[in-house]
Length: 220
Image 1 (cartoon, rainbow, N blue to C red):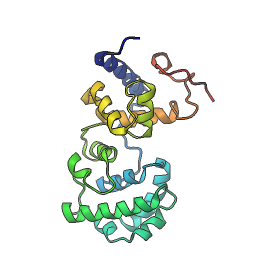
Image 2: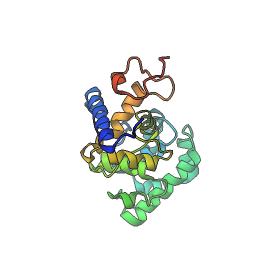
Image 3: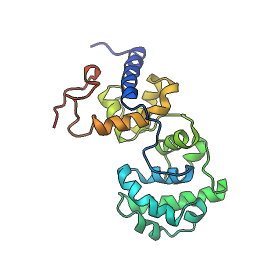
């Protein structure tokens, strides 16, 4: 079987995104509850290895007690751990949240910076978190946030076969036009939840079934 050219892969990726945009026209809304760049940053940090719904259950209490970087910077990690203990890896997340708030306070006057380089310098912040914050809080798309949904769908759609999120992002950036980067994560998360689940994907009823290279999974 001949190797697919980048141009052909771009056409496939564009066709996929065209269909998904029709399914989710309101795909620019961030799925995590937040009120500003700081609460978004912390919420995204907490969302690793857990669900958005689980994060949304703890953040009202968390931000009720520590609504700003200045407040959270003075919190004890044990107190934060107690509030977020229902989340996976809550101890390390609590530590990173406090350290992140302290660095925001010390280096940025308590404000969330708006550049990739500065964001990934914060404790507990990687490219996925930085991409989401830049996109949702500042309206800038410097990359594509690769979470578990995007990682899984990129593989099923043969848009990347890389084993690391950073390499998957690099592959996607090569075949998805830059003007569409801002919608990719939101759209694929919604699609991954409704149709392209990790287990028992709904291939038979999927509206993209006819153009999916991996549509061989049975319905549950």
